[in-house]
Length: 331
Length: 289
Image: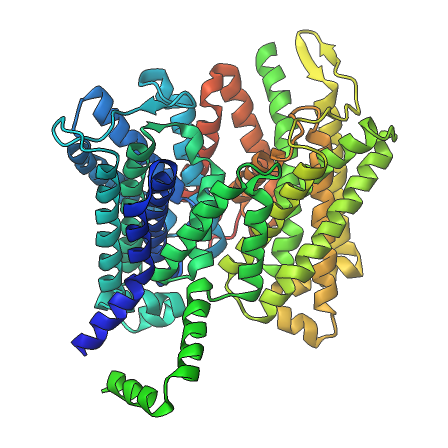
């Protein structure tokens, strides 16, 4: 059983390992692309907790990423904190905001929840755009942060890359553990039928709140990474379109699927980079990809990738061997 | 006092726009239970196509408006048959359907951006920009037109849903889909009809608001958000509640803008969150949950 779990974890880690290994051999611009993929993976995994596992709509993730980006940027520039130390109060602050907001948002369901979360993201955006610049600066002009160093020692641009990769692996394994825990099962039961879950004695509000706070905290973390990655943050980075990208990662990769988040993030980041020079911009292509996935591939890309792989495996490997392996898994 | 009255009038005008747009969600929401996130794009079509028709092709304004309504209606049929019906039949979740409507909206924005251009278009100024003066109170003509159009549209919508057989069928489908089918209502056609109706109302809103905002491909987003806010403040379960909801939001916007312009966006969404916290079903909604 333990062996089986390890096998499934390492199999699921596949895409993430590919991204990380690729990053080791990439330079300059392409290294930046790999970093963005890692950050988007983290955002996707966070949203997958609330949307994939727990089945709730959240269109407000970018708001919390903005809290992370601006919180850490302000602490670094105004209070001269080290990014690692600035991360702690930023995360705690973001989690408290999420916790308080959850009392408002989780009274809502489905459509109203979708709109309520959009409202939260817009409120945070409007705050950063118009209220914050009056006292602290920022807004559309943005805030710059110094390059990440270890106590002043700068080993090169790869330092941030490994830092981001370490977070991606940590969040990934954490997600994988949660998915298979008691909490993960409770979330899935809420996703399937909230009423039935409540009737079975599951504290549905509590578990939903936990999922929302985790989702938001992970987004805050990703926000702090984003500002380190570009060395700069502006309120314009967190408009309504950025939310769409995060949502797309989850939907394209497959709701509730951790390897799917990596796949979705990789696909979307590369797509965005490659199409940014075309005059129609990424808008049409985003829409087309989303349409094809929603309409024809409802389970997300990762599911179809593994299904194809399994189909090919069946063609190559003798039947008796596969049956033995399946029996192993059930034992 | 006169400044206050001027701002009240502007607030009423703005609120009417938000209200019409909130109302345009209603047709789709009552018949399918989904909020169409491509609704902003219907309004964008209303502004863009009428602008192209009037300024590039030299058409008269009413024809431009009709053309944009037809285009929005056509788009609504596409959304209905390409995404909503297949996903409803598959029993996909509401989130999937929302994202599907977003997908079509994005494709449309890309397509319009590629053909017409992303730049801001010249607006179809269907009315002169001067104003009436009552003493010191300034009443801009454009807001007057918007208010009158809103009253006409909402009365028309009300008469349609209460007095005509198609309107009643629309309400019935929304209340109980299976029940409506059982008594012989062709619910798929009713839903299509509801989509077209909503799209045309949104296109009218986009056309009316064009002289006040800059008409561009991304214009739909701000209208979408205002429409949401109006609908949620009023209560999404009741289509007409979007009208008073919109007017409340419009007045708030106008007063805050008159006091300190920087805070407008924040006041709007902040107010929305406050209302969601106190009355999650909206001010005039049925609070059953």
